[in-house]
Image 1 (tube, rainbow, N blue to C red):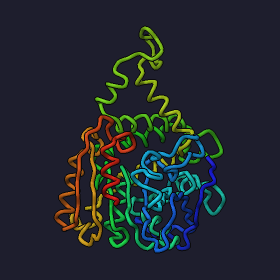
Image 2: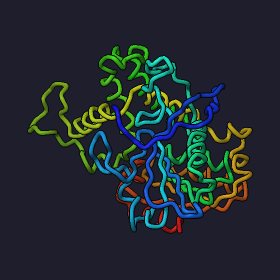
Image 3: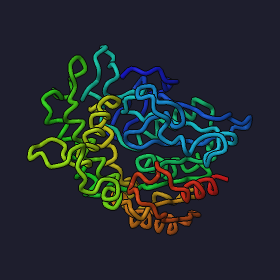
Image 4: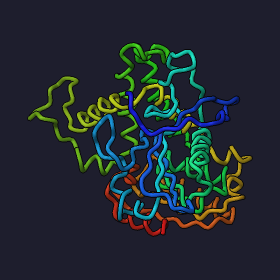
Length: 362
């Protein structure tokens, strides 16, 4: 999985919520657009669970366009003719930032010796990156899904660092249902004999387990209506059922394709660590049990966006967040957009999203 991204080793040890510090952390990142002389036009873009820093450029492993190329670029809603966009691969991931596959001081990959991290730890590393780049204040921090969690964490814990906070298809805490789906994925990975307690870097990895984890998670990113419209009960490349366990249905074939493709670009241990970080995320718990208290010192304008077909982080979660922001006296706008794609709507062609994003960042 070797890539050669732009990267920076943080000059100071990274404090961790789990205790202690982590020295020599490397952060891989990409930038788009030109930083203004007064450094006032920087946007930190935070990626989702299986995303990376390649927002608007070709992915070095898959050759595919960046995961938000439709949103980021010259003349696009996040306009790189106006803004300097920074996206960092989160700590714990596998696209150049320090993670379980990285060599420990003894030269052997960390594996499960890697410390358990949190969303706030990820943001600490991003703040340290901004400091190293000389960017004291952001025009905005933007993120969808896990990226939205990072945006909210930055606003709550570093309230002076961003003028605007755009949180899309996200939540202020992981629900029991969210945790349950993640646990199914983690158990699939750890039940694969090739996982070997996380020590598999010199052998074939737990691709079967990781593929199943991806399949289970991918279902949560879609909507029932979207699946029905796209696949229904149509058969895959056959006129009749096989009366066996091959992929008879198109939806089965699609999920198997998603699972097998994922194993070529993602590390199984990273999947364990990042899903655990998301499960630990609870902004209210971090601030004495009251979500409004998390934003008591907020100095930014907020925009919260949900989608009516998203059952992973439903609109009720966004409304709960908006009520807390209102209680804290933070300026916030909220919109629920209609889209048939489920949670993944923020990544797909939803023109109304483009208009809201562009308008808020003006």
